[in-house]
Length: 136
Image 1: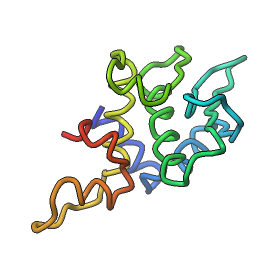
Image 2 (image 1 turned 90 degrees about the vertical axis):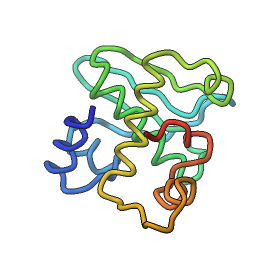
Image 3 (image 1 turned 90 degrees about the horizontal axis):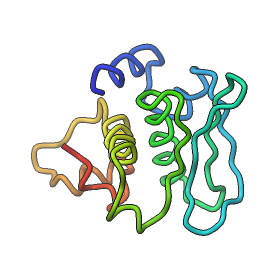
Image 4 (image 1 turned 135 degrees about the vertical axis):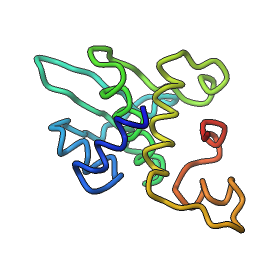
């Protein structure tokens, strides 16, 4: 996973998931979802799509984009939904991996200050508290 993120950041010169998705020709769409669904990734006719709930804050949209990008890079060929809160307690293997990918991507190349707590560091990187346990 670290190697995949390193290559993406080096290739696109950023850890911004929206820029990376565009560079990979993944179409990102903002749509209205039912409560409980933040985003999804799917493939159709060789085209790849990331759909993000348009009611989310900018911070969460960035996290969801990174998470769905993780599905594209790690779980090629699988369409995954990222369901809200309850799944944080019983996430499957693919969802955990996509969460780790998102946190690693969004913290890549952001140095932690010596005086900074891990929580403050993750918040500064735009990682919501719900995902703090996915940081290594």
